[in-house]
Length: 239
Image (cartoon, rainbow, N blue to C red; front, side, top):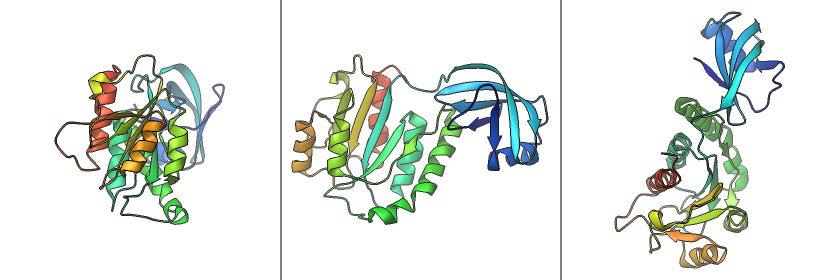
């Protein structure tokens, strides 16, 4: 059944507009009475088309339920900015694995160092990648791709999570030792090609982040977050 995402909706009159409305009528050739699924707020709304034009599709809600594909923990990935198009790959796979938010961060060892205004121009494309991955994975919401953060912004925000994790190549505990009990929000910091500077790692640890490592093998910066998210989902019963 076709799935469409809305940021907000009125359950008494669910309405799809814009490109999605044209796609429903012109590409999918759907008609009044056809069923489809609308995703919003982490829920799946089973609907039936009530009226349709190229500009608007009005739906009757038949039922709603929490999306089974949404994890029980809200994981935010704070990813130090990598080179080239690696961030696109990280976003795509992180969304598929269950992250609810990806925050690019500028750290000391980042080789790619765009200005915030330059990076902002990339956000629409990155958000589109997240939306496509969410649809493919059957997610109940489209994860947010945040604007470029400074290291200090990341440190402050990570303190608000139930559990903050620093992926650190210089040692730490294993994922099986991380105390995830009663955690609803998880913040995970992953370095770029050069990892984190020791002073940065110390600041994160002082801010409450638990240092975790993935063993003796050195993983690429685009591999480490995917392995870490996978292990987190497994340890919290979401995989």
